[in-house]
Length: 300
Image: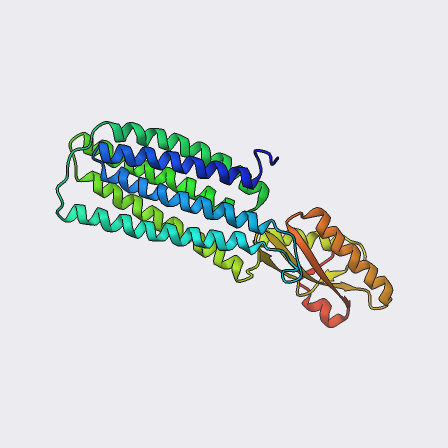
């Protein structure tokens, strides 16, 4: 049975929460005459689809490697996150179009107090969900969970904007309600673009963050026999990393010693960096020409 900190449980909670919050916002928006809260409810209904896709994608990503996928199925998480981003982007455009139509001339009614009360409750619930999901995302490094955490954060901002508009409209400025819906739409689109950009980077085998790669390089040069690194880089695969390291050693090192050193270097990285799934180590002699172009040298 997975614990509360697992990605699967986190995504299940997000799915159930999004369903309940979407129903609450839609009911309050329709009954309480708030276009901003109806727009936010549409956003949450799309979150239900997003949470379902994220859960399916993460389940597929957990499948072990096989003959046709020797590095596993980690990119299923990324594909799920990309699909989520596209859904969120389309939602933002739809919400913006409806709000703009209201501003241009559809009759604007004054909302009741109900949407204000529901919006406050939704903000509190989403803030709690964001904190919980962000903690799980840091532990699991799942792109789908990271996208879900970003979605909760975006919802807090979106519903906060809706709350301001609804409260102002309830107080006597009805135009601010559809203007708040435009604010919600803008946040939704911005959030979608961030998700799409981050996950396209992963799908294109982009390199991990420089700080993380630097830690991996430091692990390699801490081994006494390794004199430096040359052309060391990495690529992402879902939530995992594959490292390609070219280590520089003494020129008189035997082939068998070099082979054993490469095995030790690989294991050292795997032991200290759980996000790394594989390390390919290439041994090169420490010649003067390579010493001058080494990207990282040990100070002795």
